[in-house]
Image (cartoon, rainbow over all chains, first blue to last red; front, side):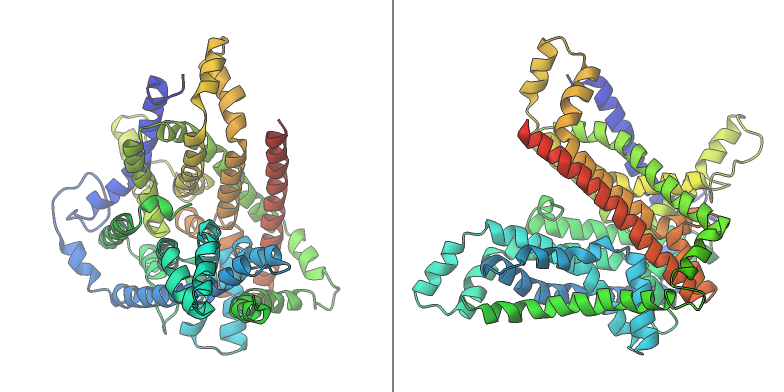
Length: 262
Length: 276
């Protein structure tokens, strides 16, 4: 039987699990090495690579701008996405399915193409500020997550609750804020987290608009990696892993992590 | 309810996507058809070069092999995780999710440590005297495939676990009672039931690998370009915007076409499942 007690299956799975975790463990180990190039086994222990992170202005400003862009883009995607989902699920519109797939259509277009097209059109042709263009690009990245996750929970929510509040004299607007939003709260948080993580980690969209005027963190690390090969990259990688772990912990505490990846 | 309100609620999202996704695409598409030599001349020119075919072929090869390897590795571990007790399953889920949510640069960088000239594999093989000089694994198609498998395996596992947990074990027990070997049960009983999720996972992995930039950039180097890295090189290094647009549009067409084909296939499988 291929159940969890099957020995062969268990051994194979444990090996694969080890292969998934091992590379990240190696990154952690190399970040403490006292040699100037990344190597294993390590010959000594030092924390100097961690302090070297702060000597890299690109990492510091990159972290700030990545954080800012991710926050703004995620909020924007929620503010624009939730009303659209509400309209699609609550008003019996014609072509609702068409709109739904229209909003999800950007997932069909490779991110690198979105980044390239947006850079050429917004930044080069229409001379829009890089920061605004970056936020637009990341907004496009985030919107599908909002549409998918919020649609699922809007369809799960009993629309009679909202109708009951109207009968009791609540205006539709008030009902939306007092009844609908609290009911889909956990999926709003889930959508926000997915938007934030994906925007913060994104490379293909940020890549083109990344430059001397504005540095994003992932392209900055990529850039550093291509010019240097010292454990600073390991150190900043560990910092990012801790960041990811913290966010996962937060999501797990607030809504349960299994909610965000469905 | 008031239809006008609905329209107002839809407008921002609608124009956001229209103006910022489709308009730029049209903007970059138009000049590629405006060559004096003819409507499609830039495309025929692009496809005449054998180098470009190498890049397209490499992109395909990497995507196809990645999907196959990810499936072979992902299926057993999903079966195993999906059938654990709930608490164990949640912990394992977190272990799978963690790499998925970690930055792609970090995950690819990890493989430089393993595959590089001074990497672990070379050091290990050298110390065992299995090789005399370090192998060049990094910056090859192989390293791109390894990196892509590592990047997309968690996505496949995450897609499969849910439907594995919903499988009815009694069906397999029935198969075993009727004399089916575990191997036979896997192919004739378990995999057919998981067919739709397997295809969904394959679509995600295939499209992701086809269009990925980070992995081929970090693990492929400059000599092993794929379409995504070629777009960037043409646009930003060589300043050839038109050529970059041509590749961008070809990439859209190829990835959309393959996704459409796979979706049709999964739709047909779905119908077969519900009819049965």
